[in-house]
Image (cartoon, rainbow, N blue to C red):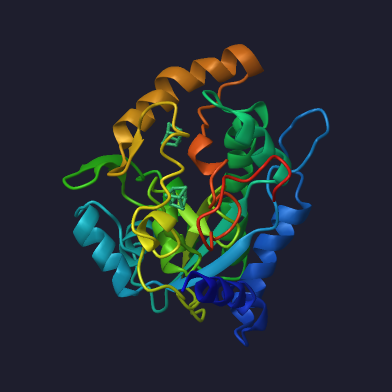
Length: 309
Ligand code: SF4
Ligand code: SF4
């Protein structure tokens, strides 16, 4: 079953290049060219190495019923694509697409963090700070390029109206989720730890832009939102992310967002400042040293060795 899903996902990865949708190809090129060539994609370390590998890109329709479902489940404050478009432009969209991307961590960053037991590696901490700055710059670049072409576009996560709220069912939650948009755009499914397992694994960050443009959606080649996680696919046989968490925020019941958040803000921010000389609250221990680190896991396997990936 998972093998078939992996093959499907590989086909999905080349969907953008194969599609006859010229606008989709153009947007894909904007994202890829920026990440592969812009000086922003850097860890700002001595070697000046890249923060991110080549991005994955997917598209979902702005009126995809999934967005209404997210709103119903998360809370009334959660934006549908049409809502953030209306709030931003005070206009009704005639066409609407959510553009999503996944930025995979590099092999070197994953290998370093795989060795970490309590605190994140310096590379991972750099990717959380400087890599995320590149991710923000990418979103701004995509918006700017589309607006130059006369297309209204907004990155919801960077809207001045973006904020955290309390969801009755999910605790603290924001009014837009890049991971949910990536799921809607066929880029991956959620793991036990809430991370999104993509064709390049769970060690990644993602982003999205809502645009008044009509692009063919990327097929969602999975049957449910947990399809790629071994814990759900194989009757609880994995759970290898649970002991990776130094904060006790993971269990067979899932992800305790509050414990995780407290660890990031109360412990890791100070650690990065005192050990690495900059402020960063990245962790990512549950994203590395696990079977879903850099791929869709096919079967129960040991955590990858330091040579893997
Ligand atoms: S480590 Fe295992 S249980 Fe945890 S998210 Fe990955 S596949 Fe799922
Ligand atoms: S990010 Fe860190 S603290 Fe949060 S669940 Fe993962 S391992 Fe635990």
